[in-house]
Image (cartoon, rainbow, N blue to C red; front, top):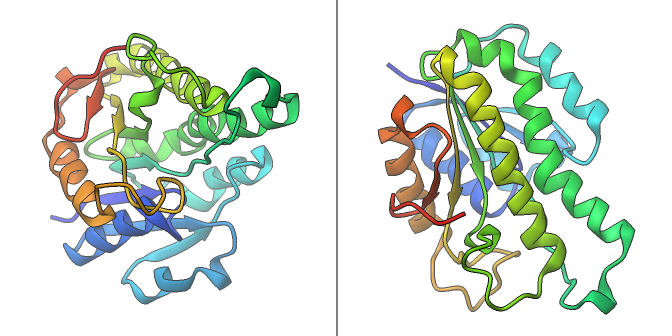
Length: 225
């Protein structure tokens, strides 16, 4: 029986590939785009497209009404942005706030907005795309201030969410997709989106409540905080 997935940021990169592979295997997919009428390749897949701007809390709040108590099995918080803040000299409040809003705050608010639907779903699974750059333990190179810190914040927010929702049978995890050849990852990245998503879906399919709160690499191994 097909599961219902919600994928944010689905018009390009990993989000587009999640939508492609999930729709191809017959899942019930709701993919979000800032402008559903101009969603490009996403419109060629067998799925539903909903409007969502993750930089806008009001747009996120609209998800609750849009889902209308529709059961949701898996939320994939994929939407994210990069950052060019390589040194402290480059850091600005506007840049930090923009990146934190999209990469940290929005995934939590999206989970909050669709929580009624997730409670009705079979899997009660929340997957947020993080990065190995979020690891404080492994941060030996600095740089990427806003991006690193926003993903670290995402991991902490997910751990709190996991602790709160775990008693209800939820599984909330963060995952590192690898260095992927997308607009964000750049043309020199060694992993194709199709290969990254294939690994991530294998991981997602095998998750159980015992995995709640964990930080996974794309191959299923655990990454250090």
